[in-house]
Image (cartoon, rainbow, N blue to C red; front, side, top):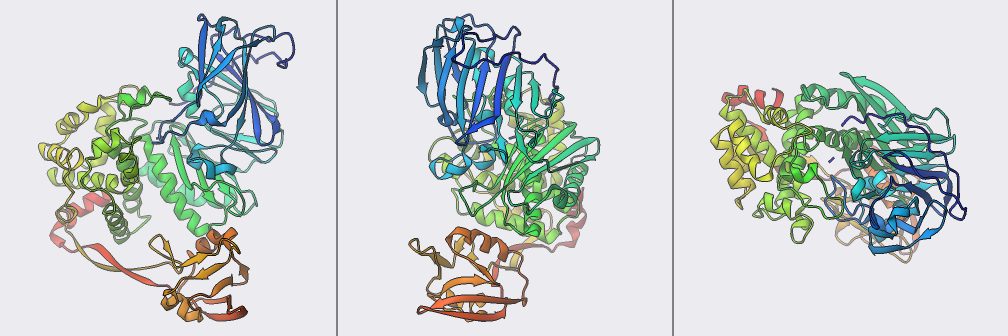
Length: 615
């Protein structure tokens, strides 16, 4: 999804009145001032106070975003606001009318001096809404506040381009990780100033006990901050892998260097309780918010960070640098979506995989395996739906149901474009070169019209590339992937990959009794190699593995733990069969799956293939 933020040192807001008092200070500056009180948290709710500049109209409306950049669903963050009240300078109440889930109109607005409301969090009630966890909020007094600013602070349309000063009172034991600059020297208050609302939205803050590292990569300062509720993971423990990854990304990007500071805010969820379960990340110009399960083994967690965080970081290219007017002039409550998700998400996802083979973080065969998996995943979706139409209509059915394809077919579109450009230029140029040229043409401040992008790409590449875009991106024709792979001397073949002991694809081979929370083996699953090696049978209730008890509450931990298992390692299990508990011993036998894969077979194309993957 996801401008360097230049924080200015404004004078501190001098007021301490409560709504019931007779005097309310009015901001004399042309800025929106916001007070967020993390000391007075009640029932996982935070009090927010907004002081607007002088208002000239009789009525004004305060909005909380319905949707934010980088998300492609209408999430209605205003639903988490309670008890919205307005006051004049003497502390008298003004009439507030809620006009929809995200908007409140204040009458007699010329007198408006202060707006107050409580904000509830989203993590512990995730079953009641569809907000993606990295875009949501967490409020745990004294422990963690995931302060995605769009969930706490709204806007008046009249003051969208007015500077914001945000003052946050917090316990001295909590530290706010962010890419913004705190201009308050105390340990119990932070002051952040940005030039307009959109910059505030793009700057999340995570408050928790300080656990962070910093390092520099090619002139960019990187901050890694971690919240691990049970202290299982620390920032220091994951920093070496993160530094390796981000150094490789910067080396791959070369000329792209749009920010001097970048923050990775990592929230690790405790899956044994009501906590965040939408795992992944959300990008911003200078930050990424990440939510992952705390119980995930470190090796697997590192792999997830490599894929997820790298994807978000590559959004520096698009749409943060290269984007349409729909993104530059984003409407938080009546959004118009761009046609070019194939570029914003597809090219980004492709780069997140290509840089790994380019920088020797994965092998060539592993790269082909990843692309083969994307082909298989894309085949389960509507392959005839024009991508441009799906993109512009993504908030509506049936198009929203195809959104996941931006990470599958979107990446494959980018790959085939890359191949076509390489073939046309005899390996001299690829899609990264195209993105660099588009960056020079547009950049962060100049947006393109949706309808002009294909013309511009053609002028920078070739008519062949334009035909590809018209046929396979704007048109309904499925892409012949084998044809494009063959251009690089890569052909299809069968390949065997290791499966998961408990899953085939995304389908588990067990089920759960909701009344008892017990895990039981599904009929027909006893023939799976893993269960056979241990002597587990259909209908057995799985109680323990390697001494750890499992049921509905921590079944996710069981699956995550199995991702690090090695073939032939010893393993123990306890099951209940016909009411009797049985202890079992054996060795791990992981199932294998034969899938369609790709291999480099044409030596005559080796030089061109090398330019594609290593150029």
